[in-house]
Length: 568
Ligand code: ARG
Image 1 (cartoon, protein in one colour):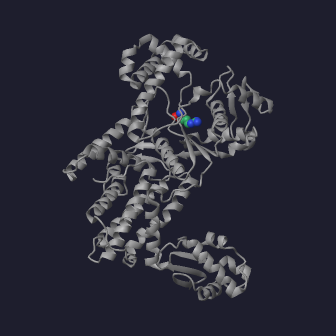
Image 2: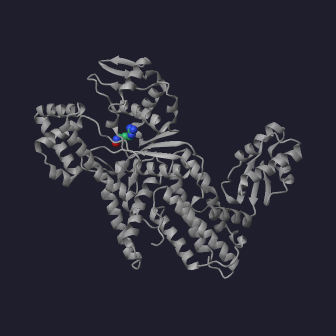
Image 3: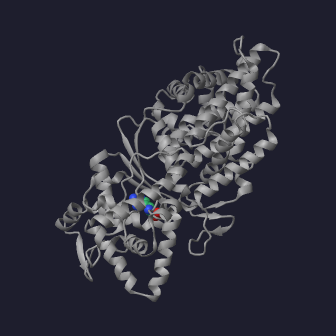
């Protein structure tokens, strides 16, 4: 039942009865309905202040008159200082919500909002020949959660790993490899070996600048399509992606496209021509730029004085390619806030080009990651690799499970789900723009607002349902009139709107917080009420609520990329 619509209908008819004419539509009224901060003030509240202007009456007079005229509402209506507070009949409310959740099953909260629309999501976007460290964690998990959320709302989604696979450093890397490397060591050592070669190259080039010439020559060779250079470069890429694939596998993340920066090598020409034709390019000390001074930004450099293209040039070509290929409604860039300016600049350039569709491009930025109070620094060796972090988390989870649930059968599998869940949850808990400081004891806590806590709650609900077995009686929903049950019901009702808000704001943390709220509410209900009551009607109602809560918690966890665990 759509309570908002029902209440709005009641208000509109009451307005007609009292004042002869509504002056507002049911839709407008529904949009103005508020969720009171405290359930003691009702389930919904309607403020009469705006009506006061139209009707030229004091708000309390209006709310009094309307309260007296509403007669078809299932529950209580009170007028308090210009507000109409609606208290839905609790049994009816619980029955309606729980019934709806169970009828929709795993699809509860999903929709066809995005039917016919495509969302491109650029996330994770790692760099070749660099280890996948926890600085790339937010982009990876925020992007994945957003993808799940958009999928759930019926959009077609395209996940893109915009690889950092272009730049002069790759010339240096090939030079270093040719000088000191060998195939076997790199195959075995993976990205770590490549990084070692690169570090050595830079150190030695300080003493011996001729090395830099070799680096430049190899980069030119890549650019010119020299066979040997390309073969080595492609191989570096493969080795890096094999490393990353292990992390994606642990996280359960999949990409539709790995088109990275180098993919746009042959796609920038037409864009540069278009910029020139539209008179947007300006010469500046040999470089070609788009002047953005008018908008308070430094210029966007399109071509360097040596004719080389830049990160921005590639991104502009990439946006156009994505538009032409996928015809997106939205193209989201899940990238740290350090790149705020970069995205403002390229979006402005696209606007100046008259690319109307570029309005759908959006930078979904997020804060920095640190580790136990320390900023990450490759140079100072203070770096935490994502694979190590995940594996450590899994190992710690296994330790805890061995101690707490020695009889659990599939300990390894559960440890994997919990270990990964802890890290992902931690990364998605706060508003994305906030910096994340990773602490072990906080992430792996089974009691606080953590992934393991929510997974444990899911397992607890699952266990209750296993014990309950078949339900024979019809549910008596008046057994769900107490405050604990009602809190759970209210959260369940809010879920569909919450999923939409998470999509509108590109903010998965709303769902993470929700899983904590729902877990807390369910646990309170579990402690305060006897689910397997002797009264069979009450038992059936509480089991139904447990099912609905379990199912919605499972859906919410899956949306943020966390596995729901049957047993823990
Ligand atoms: N590889 C870049 C980095 O690590 C992120 C790329 C983001 N995506 C983009 N289209 N610019 O900083």
